[in-house]
Image (tube, rainbow, N blue to C red):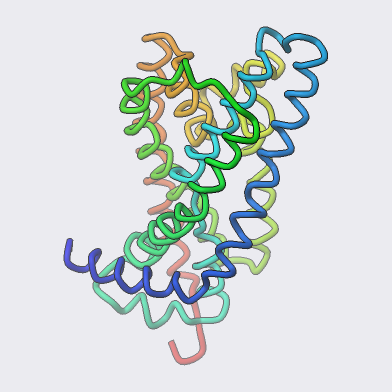
Length: 265
């Protein structure tokens, strides 16, 4: 099995190199949001001194750390799998003795991450020179503590998105549904606004939903903002949601295959 993953990793790595310009444009588009958030919040914090205790530097390091976390925990399932269900090209993959999503699509996601990292790192360093943040709160201990959280975050995000993509077995509107899914992700993951600035009801709900595990929880771990109780609760939710989304994904996949038809299949 490891040899299969290795071979698929090599193939997908080679494929990523065929679309270097596209990857470069994607990451520039992906950077627009965090840069705008930094500019807006630092302006507000600079004018008021702080926002609910968060200074301009706090906002800068929050979004810059989240950029790196998002690079690890993000996924691209809908972009490289949904069309296979719709155009029938999945037929050639489901006859193989490996799971299409958990092998080829997974390795495509990982290869994409490695490729975009080559663009992200120099841009991130450039942003550091531009905004001049102070990372005094970030320690190697916190970073190492956050590594498992980021792995959990990616796994949960990947499986949950895969389950949503399986809706393509029943409808061609999966792209619209995936965009709709992006709304709670942005709201409860701390992507737009740090969760400590959100209304109390949003903060409470986010603790029990999986979305904050994608970005907010690992980011706060790196920043050293969580107590021991918060850390244990976060990892507990990681384990719980990983089990839940895996079960949901398996049910969606099996049910979807029963609905799948394609010319020549």
